[in-house]
Image 1 (cartoon, rainbow, N blue to C red):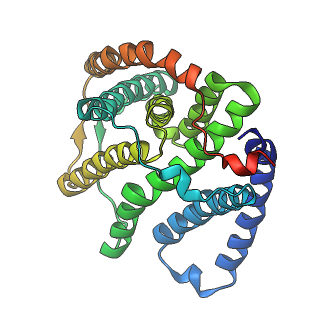
Image 2: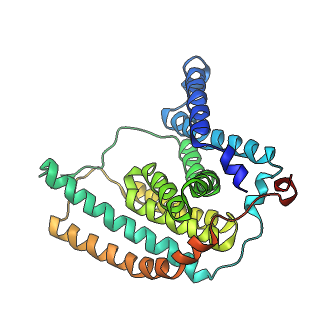
Length: 282
C-alpha cells in the first residue's frame, strides 16, 4: 500500500496536468472546437484537465502496482440511510450559512449600499449546453472528484503526513476548488473522507456527492425559471446575519456530534487499503 502513494507524488500529477492543459488550450485555439459555445467549451476544458487527466494518471499508477481502478468501487460497508441524508442536508445548510456570512463581510468591506439587484441577462444559452452542464455537475463531477480527492489525494497526503492531515488537507484543497462555497465544500470533503474510511469504498461518497450536486442543480434551475427582468429588493443586513446564524447553527447541530463520534475511528482506521497483497509481497 505504501509503495503506491510513495510513487504517486503530487508534483508529478501537477506537471502532467499543466502540460496537458497547455496541449488542450492549443487544440482549442487552432481547431474548430473553439466555435463551440463558450459555456460548453469551458466546462469541457475543465473536465479534460482537472478530471480526466488526473484519473488516467492515477489509473496508470495503480496498474503499475497490479491494482485495477475498480478496486476503489468495491462493495461498500453499508451506512444508515438517515446518516447519508443528514450528511448532505446539514452540510449544505452549514455551507449556505457560512456563504451568507461571507456576503455580509464583503458587503461591509466593499461598502456596497445597493438595495436592488437585477436578474436581467442578455446571454442566451442553448438547451443542450444546459443539459451538458447539468450532467457534468450531477454525474461527471461527483465521480471524478471522488476518485481524485478521496481516492488519490487523501491517500497520498495520509501516506506522507498521517490520516488526520490527509483528511484536512485534501478536503481544504477540495473546498478551494469550490471557492464560491469554500466552507461548505471543505466540510463536505471531511465528511466524505470519513465516509470513505467507514465504508471502504468510494461508492457511498459518490452517491452522497451526486445527491449534494443534484440539489444544487435543482436550486439553480429553479432560480433560472423564476428569474425575471424586474429588480428584486435585497434583504437587510440583519436579516442576512440572522439567516446565516440559523443555517450555520442547524448544520453544526449535526456535524459536530458526527465528527466527535467518527473522527477518532477514521484516524485509527486510516486510508482504506486497496493494495494487491501478492504484489506488495514482491
